[in-house]
Image (cartoon, rainbow, N blue to C red; front, side):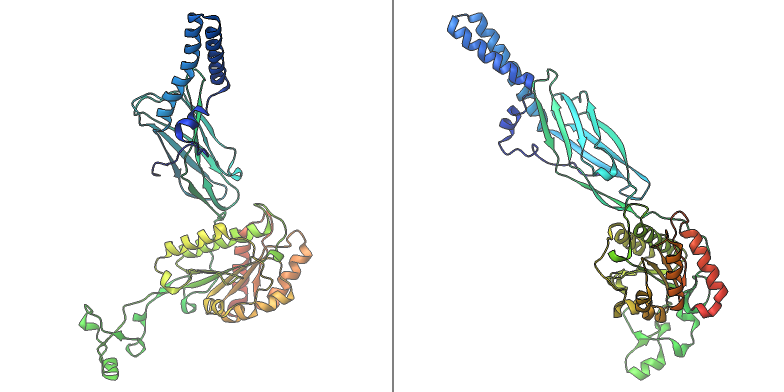
Length: 432
């Protein structure tokens, strides 16, 4: 739950009380003007009864200002997002809580939360009266078809007195972030290769399977079991060495996402670029659930996770990659030529490439990645409206040693995924 938001009057540096008098409505100002006019006439005509009427007309809006100002300065507000991270096309619930922390009941409360237009219209609520110490809760839903990170807030609260004399606005400065992840498609449980050592379907092996002479020892650390002392290495090094703990060798996969602005046409949730991002996110989640060690690579050289030290927990790695995909945008890069860092990332791994428009030059630029990888599968997402162009792109990628399947609008990644698995099975070891 969010902490109470703090803030003063919205955009007014004249002082709280002066700003409160600035909140007089047309009715309140009319009462003040009528009271002043009645007082002036009473003085000119010598009518004390008219003076009393004038004083009453002026005191009423002033009293409303003072009472409302006291309530206004002691209203607390919270916002709660459930959940704070959603997938594109799903909904999140936003709950607003308002509490009256004074000993006086509040007047009419008008709530308006500021949200980006992509999430819908700005929600407005009306609370009739909040008793001293009372709390009110209202909620609304937001939904986005576009991934991204969207600020929620600030929350604006308008207080009005029962007579309609005064309206005071207060803007709370606190904001919350709603993260909308790319759309995820459920992929069929078929293997695309890239397993550790070329064995199994995403299985694991450990160094315990190796012979004693193949184990790479390390220096003894306080607390190590003496039964794991590697005597041969100890004699060779002249220092106490122990066998390493069993370390799983997980199947590895590198997902390459092409973000070149020149590689894609169109915009919106169904654009080629969004299909590529969605495909990359779906592949990352699918393979991570099957036990793969997954890495995201882009044409700009972005690598997530950025170092081996970050690869500690599969769930954390998937979260890092999904957060990166939620906000990734087009790049100004014009070539897919890999960096040395990218070449190291794909060494011996399954390589999945979600690409834009690819000509012969770009296919040739990808050749070093293909040569370092195990199996290599490309999913070009551009040009699907033109079957001839799609066929041309696939031929160019296949000539460079890739298995290629286009991401057509409406067909979805699951079908292309299954077709790619069939192509790999048909080619056998030649596709590696």
